[in-house]
Length: 295
Image (cartoon, rainbow, N blue to C red; front, side, top):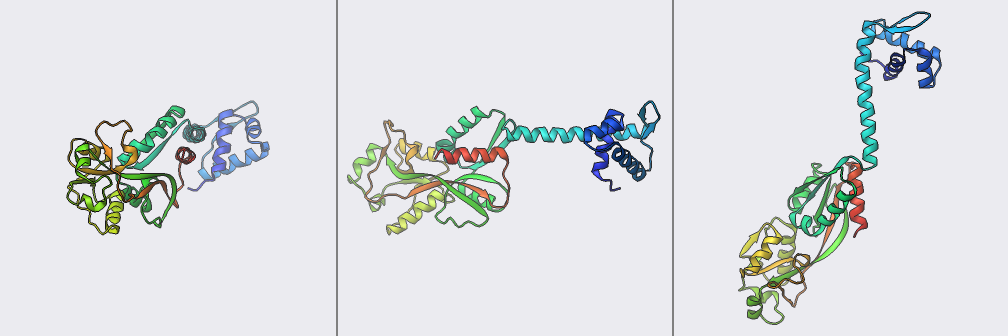
């Protein structure tokens, strides 16, 4: 059965008000139009919905049954409208972000804190994974929004990329290693030193590998770790020279030193990545604006 929704809308108001005249006023139509719509609905359903006389009007058993279900449907529609209004006012909704541990810790945390304070009813969910995995999932339509270390090539198909922050990679070590090395060591001076890097499936590691090749050297790390924080911890206990983003080193760290390398390590960028053809929720769009305006 394919009944026009407008007929149910007229029936809902007529049944709620038990008056064709008042239903017509609520719908801004004529009483004759309401009467014709009800007759058309009764014909299509094959059932009498109203008992009408000069003094009043009441629903038949079939009319009461239909009104019960139609009322539930209209309540759901109204609830949906309220939810949309709440979402537009950022009083309800969810923001789901794909980002690495490093980006969460050294970039996103402050923004998330501020956003949550301003919009406490917006739920924030973070999928922690390497940037390349987030990029692949967004390009494949499995995720809508990510904050990633940008790859060397910005030509990833199916995504929009907005650069929001630059940062510098540095080499770090303890005083024990600083004393063993020249005052301004080169990359080649590190060939006999245990090196500590992120794993090979990260954009950061790909940059470092390419940088070493450009210096006619090969990066062979002694330790490959999953997080920047672990690299700093390994360096702090004297296990070697690590490569991290400069923001990961506290200015007053009593143990870790930044090496003054002859070569400048690559500068990098963090960016927002979205799927080209997937519309974003209103809370997600607002959170993106907060990130972009804060750069």
